[in-house]
Image (cartoon, rainbow, N blue to C red; front, top):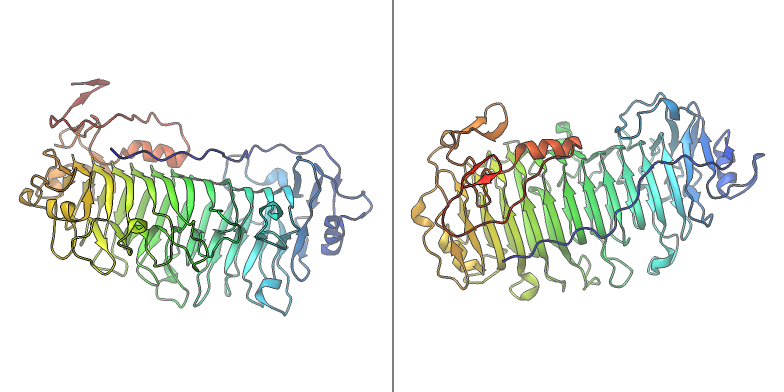
Length: 557
């Protein structure tokens, strides 16, 4: 059986604790530069645990290169806050676009390169800063590449130079309405958190652009309860080789965020790609998020998880121990592509991925041939194999093309690409079912592409059971409990037209999964995860004995 992913071993502590140190109130950008120097502006020099209070009615425009965060030593956070702090949303509530009580910081207006126009940058090993109640944006006259750069100032190949313990809390971080900007925050450090912020309007013509991007920081990263918008990738890990040997971004926790693309960008010149992309990463939890609006443009899929050694120098690149659970994806053309090494450069094959209890809604925006979950690779050797993956309890709806597909880039013949796979308890509606090379479907696709793989207890709506007979591949099982409802109506959703994909008690799939739960996603648990409630999530071990179970209350019969 496939092995479950290892959870993040460290999650950054985001507890709010207002410091007891000296309060400093710089009256303008010049005094803020002096204070961060650190220098004396009349209230003394800045030390760890102090508070910098920025006036909500003053605009602080950064000098060329950006305001520089110093290394103050110690382990007590220094806070940078607004005079309107008491009137911003309370702890636990995401901020919006209302700037009435936020203090405004604008990136430099330098006429040099886009990299000179940052709002904040770090000295080597800058650490323990928390930003609360700020509006941080870019110059409106010149394009900016990175608004907030949490990266080592020099020698980025030395990991000890990286910034660490930096938190953005209830702040509005946005691109320019006309020019946009390439990137909201570059998160290339350790213990970096973005919580309850509104990060939007990041866009660029002809190049990738992100709300958050990380490639040269070890982590942990804690991204919680934010609104995140970019035309390119709303969040990406990878995309450039790490300069620290053996570094992959790790211990990544992404919870309760709203990933969004505004529909007015459809047909624009901005480079539109996906909502979330992993090219590298280790020990990743993505849970309780809403992913909304994505269409076929510069890329095809809303979610893009794979392994990429971007420029050939990161031979240790991998994406492993990925848990994507209790999320909702809505109004996207194509839902998800999951890949092994999808490039030709040397990398490490991905292992231990769990895709569980997600509601995935495809809807035609640009693409009339809408896909569900595509599993592919580009290398026929071990680097290209995808191992120990579990896809269970997902409800996948609104498709018109491929439900789940095993696919070699280049369509190689008779090549195994998957080992120790489990696909069970899913509902797949309006699709070509489980497909493979050419017109292969069901058992033929399974046996050509997989070994040691079990597929059972799935609902393949509209497909023929004749294509899902006994498997003959090494260690493969095509179970006898897959079902083939003739129509979506036969599944008996509570209100499919109204977007309620719970099952009626009369549904043939009600409490008929391998673990006694409903086939498909636990919609109540998804709602609770997105809302931040503690859900009574019932998890059971699958039983592939061939006898379907029914559950009444808490008794498995």
